[in-house]
Length: 114
Length: 347
Image 1 (cartoon, chains in turn brown, green):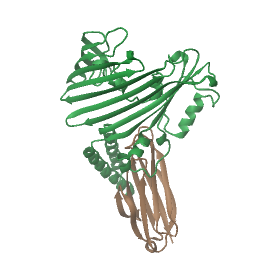
Image 2 (cartoon, helix red, strand yellow):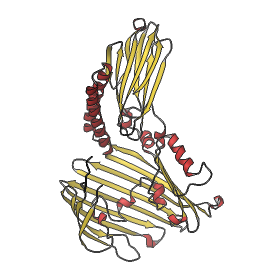
Image 3 (cartoon, chains in turn orange, green):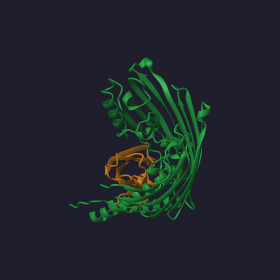
Image 4 (tube, one colour):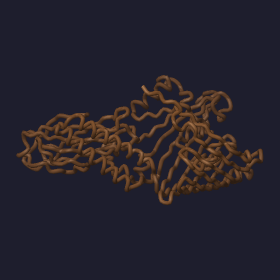
């Protein structure tokens, strides 16, 4: 499991999340704010997760399971994009499939701050 | 450990006395299979079958391999073979699953390209007449990669999606480890099934390769000359129902030292139905001189009556050669002994 723990400063407008699973691999991502699941699927593009003013102080969880469907590479890479705050934010997580393993879980935890 | 034994029932004519040649998908030497686009053009042009080929998949592994082979860049590597897919040495964060499976022309060329490099001392190849080193460099790619069974791909992808979503939910809700392990196993099975499916391409495929060999006599850099160049083009069309493969091969080889060029153009079909496989092939060869003009034509029939057990027959005409033995006539039985483990030791 590859993890990322960081924070994201929100404003008052809508916050959106995009998740891109690269290297031609297949991945599904669960998006949750606090304990509430907002989405769980392969295409997370500009998903509105709420207004910044409502999100401040909460935790955004991005949990992605990636399978090695492309054997040309041993590498998996996931990009988390947050928009809507004062600054855009892109975070990238990378890992290699271990010998004999064909799946990796990535977990991004972002503390949303005012 | 498995042992493969084959029984040859009868061999009529000895133009190509190879049992493997009696297979519909493994034609006789000189046939289309030999002329197809090679996986590693550098090795073919050097007449090499390396026992160990380095296949680094990361820049670090590539650097380590090159440094080890050259003594930290102190000398030319000797008897060294490497095959690299350059596109996959770096991550591609924006290459999605959909783009990977539906690549455009340029994306297909990039994601299927491989570069082969091999070096050989004179003792290992007929290319170097005296002491020295021969270096082969080649590239191969799929201009059109074909595609896997789209319905099966969509179905397996949907299955994998469901499993991954369940895994996400189980991890997020801290479900019992046994439940998460069960989902992991389901994911493993679905992923392996997808990996296998993706390897089985169908539709139109166009494979291209090219390479060259340089010879350095007495290991002197100034003496380096291009000794041989080659190019291959293999368009193939594969149907699932009926199970039919049609392929065309084109090959050009230029032996610079001998001032000789060879052009091979041919075609082949393979039809398979319920264990029966019928194939036919024709290759036209031309070259620098009239003596190089020749052709090869053969038909092959194969019947599989049980797993690993084949009856095969091949008849035809091989390329003209000095011995004048151009008849191909083979009947064979492959009993496939040893396809199952001869001995199994359980712990």
